[in-house]
Structures are given as structure tokens and as C-alpha cells.
Length: 111
Length: 115
Image (cartoon, rainbow over all chains, first blue to last red; front, top):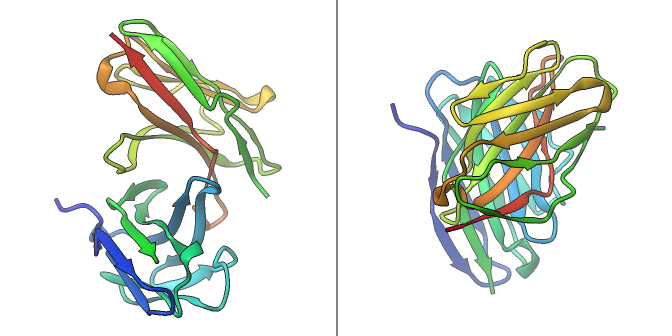
């Protein structure tokens, strides 16, 4: 059974460019989470969805960040415009009955 | 809001020894879950063990056990017979229920197993 799939695994972009990170959760999972990991701030929850509906986006740093989940098998996290301080590893995770399964992460570098 | 504290930024242990990674949490909720995740140098997050707040027995998964002391709000991870492959970052996390399952993570402990 496939796990959570994230793409791209690595992204290097220039400041001001739009970045789109993608996530395919495990089939049947009803929760999807986006986390950001940096050395300074650790793992931060950005937003999470339940049955494709955003439940809590209080962790989204600012309006430059947006996330969507158009269906149960796909979610995107978009940063527009990107800034160097957005450089981090972005994890997507999905869950059913409590246990979170993480994707391998997308490492974003904004120059 | 929930808060997780891992007081050991780094630990060094000899191979085959047991190791305890500390975790304390702060939540006003009565129903919650405690998780431990391992993050090796490759970066993925690997689920290790789970303890529910109403579980009376400490959770165990192979070499991993969770020393749950509810009154002290402590959920330490014990790894028995450590192996070189246990070298990694370890994160403690708490989730509240009530229709939401978001995890709040601690800052992590970097464990190094020496041969």
C-alpha cells in the first residue's frame, strides 16, 4: 500500500517566484496535514483538512501561503510570492483514527 | 493550547544500553494522545509508539516503550538494547481529540548511539 506521496522532493527557486507543493494522502484517510520544519522553529502545523474541508489554518504564516484540497486524493500548498525565509522542509501527513503517516517531505530552498 | 517540552537537545549512548528520552506536556484537555516519532538523517518521519490518555498500561512496541505518568504529564520514550540504527532525531507529540487530531510537536532530541 502506497504511503503519503509528496512532490517535488526538492525545489530551488528564486525569491518572488510561485511555489506549489503537492500531496497525495493515503487512500481512505480522512485527515490531511501540512507541516513545516526548520531548525529554528521545529515542526509547525500550518493547516489541516478533514474530509477535504480546511479545519484550522491558524498556523499559516501569512497571506502568501494558501492550501487547497479539491478532492480526497490531492492537496496543494502554494507560496506566492516566495521569500528566502520560506526555505524549509514541508511535510504532508494523513491520518485515520489518530496515527499520522508522513510523506518524505519537500525541501524548499528560496534564493 | 498544548505545549511539548523535550529537555534533552542531544544524547549520547553506548550501543546495547537502554536510553530514556524525556517528554513533558501541558494540556488542559482530558482526552489526548501522545506520540513518538523518529526522524533519521534521511528526513522521513517514522511513527514509533502511541499512548492514549485513558490507557492505564504503558504502551510497548518491540524495543520501544512509553513511560506514561499522567499526573506528572510525562511521556518518556524508553529504547531498550540500543542499536546504531537508532541514531536519529526523536520527536514527542501530543494530539487532542474532539474531532481534531492535529499534533503539536516538541523540539526533538538528537540521539547518537556510539559503537
